[in-house]
Image 1 (tube, one colour):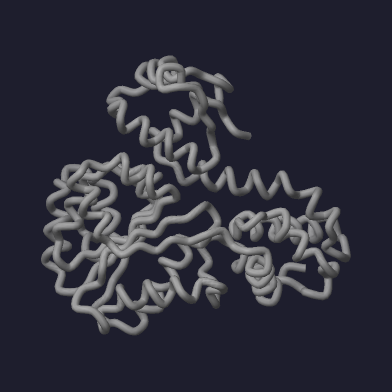
Image 2 (cartoon, one colour):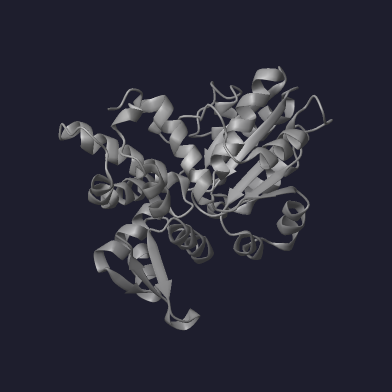
Length: 331
């Protein structure tokens, strides 16, 4: 049934970006170095599965084909969340730091490499809410570097920033994205079917059914379609039907969760593991157990930032007042 598995991989860029034309035009207009003296800084906000990362990568892929003096880097701040890790990942991805070794090299060397580059550099900082603001401010001050900062909750991120960082980031161009409508999700799924499946083996109405279940989340919708197609192939079934989708719905949710966990840095992962081991845990005990297991623990404000990231990724939930905060694992 599957003719091209690549179209279902999260890292695979779509051939066409459906129903994001307005945001795409906006991004292109402020980032294209042939139309502006310097690409603008941009903040992209929106819920999970709204296409925030996809539109950033898609836009930059297109611009890089047209502009010889444009290079870009992508950093997942859930994984690379120290200032040094972020800066070195940017210079590595842009080809400016192949000879740099992270160990024993000061972060200022990465900034120096960026400053010395004559080309435009655009750094995509995904899940930027996990990141300390130090690299944000350092990159902001490099004249030829522009930032695309991606996060779910605009208010939460700005509230956590210092006044200095907040004033800078609020001056950036803003792109806000909503969940996809039902008909838009259907178009996205239809495109995956055309490019990756034998369309005649899908029952009538099954794409509509998947779009209903996904409730505006393109990432979950694509995971449902992928898992359903795999189920049909593995069990030598002829048709992909609604009962097949029901049977694999938990597998699709687990796929998203596992992918989120794989993207975590070591300290995020440890906090999650402590919560999972306890199933439910109060804030004080969580921090105490974390400190017992780490030789050089992160500060409490940093840990709270990491915990907020775990909540945004639907890996944990919390309730209670500030004095009686409790965390639970979401399976």
